[in-house]
Structures are given as structure tokens and as C-alpha cells.
Length: 77
Image (cartoon, rainbow, N blue to C red):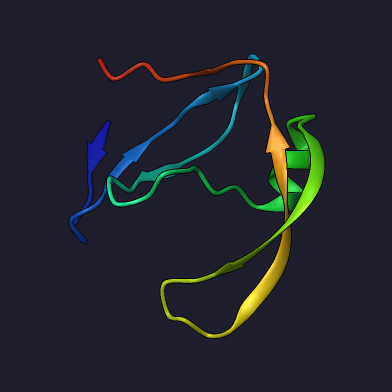
């Protein structure tokens, strides 16, 4: 886990056995967000429909849920 100059914690999770890149740990949310292109590259299955808004509040956007089989973090690095 890395602490950034902006005050965020960054992690590099393994999703279904594949390196998923950098994620910001947000302790104020109840879910994880992932870019649809990245989710598809990781082989994640999209399903359903949900409307979400960004922290800026610039309207609603239609998105999907994505499901993984395994998600892991090595916080010792």
C-alpha cells in the first residue's frame, strides 16, 4: 500500500489472478468502482443496471455491476 502526496492510499489488487493496476482506497464508500474497459480486460462478468453519480455530482450515469471470483491485496508491499 502506498500513501500518495494527495493524501490517498493506493493499492494494486489481484482480481481473478490478474494484476488490476492501481486502486484508491476510499473508506467512505460501500463498494468498489472499476472502469468498464478494465473490468472487461480482467474477464469480469457485467450484469444488471445501476445509476451512479460522481463525487462532483455532475448528473447520473448508467452503469453495470461487475462480478469477480477472487479479489486479493498484498498490503505488505
